[in-house]
Image (cartoon, rainbow, N blue to C red; front, side):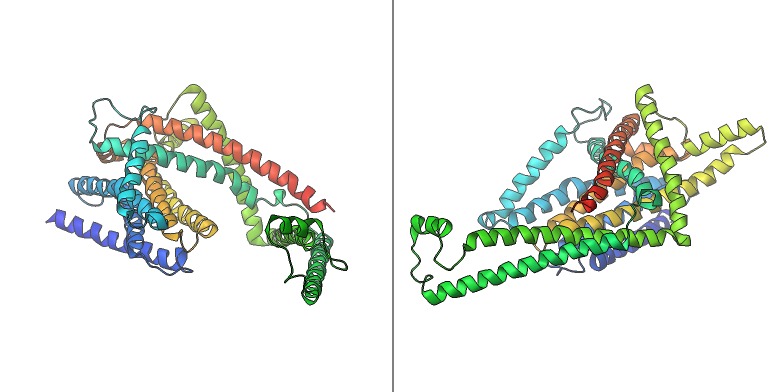
Length: 455
């Protein structure tokens, strides 16, 4: 009876997660597009639901909600379903929609979709060869084979996003990195933009007058054809007329310049708004957060470097370890086990909420940046693939943030994976991503003033 009650709780929560994923799909991702493939919407919502269910089960592990046998069953079932979606269903439909957009392959799209899926499976399987991610005793069809490879891709994505976020967050929040923008700078750039637009209008008028003159003289009807006619139109022009090809080239160059000036003007307005915002109470609060995150970024980079150099992975969760160090230093009586459980629950909850929120925001921005009416289905499926792998790898890494007594079922479900490898791999990719982001933002920040000062 308890198993049925536990299952009803899990099914209800999955329905709620599915509904939230459905609404996010309709209200955020596809609000500017007509939904023509409901299978894409269902796959995205199911992936989101089972991904959130894994985080829910982590919370249940800490709180002791549900029977342990029920949690184990739902852990196992949830992982099997999410792996089935990520390895078999989503890659096949990505290939199917790619082939469907190619007119020549439209009649044989099912065959070519299967070929693309087999190609994906080959490279997906070869991905595990260079990494020590599995115990040698696991068979080729074991669930650990799939989790280990999905974990490598997901941990890599997490580390790349974390490294960039750790650097970009203080850069975005801190007013120290804002360049000084005055009304004079904006007016000067707007004046250049207006002058460029006037030049474009003037040259287009000249082109229109020239075409009308040529039409009145009959040059359009008597224009020689063939290669000789093309060469003559470029190298020569009728008396009293102008070379339209050269004028068109000048117009194209000026239009490109006007686009650049418009973007720079919009950037200056945005920077000025950020300067005004930084003077408000909320702006000062985020500025303080920027300093805090900059310290955290430096500490994280330092610890990642130490972990890589010394080849170490923590055996104790960071909350328990931090409390033990504090208690020993202050010499006070403190129930480390009791309070570490509650603080770990709060910490894991914060990690889960911020991970889901941050990933959804990133997916939305990425979708708006590259999607179109033809590619939207493929991109949504790619985002579902990234989301599922991201959440599976989050479970692998969050496991270390939990006290040992709460890791038992998760470790049993995930199998005998080389967990230490994933933490070392995360440190390596995080360090590379963070240092690359620092270099990129430094160059962008250095070149921005020079670009606006250029005449």
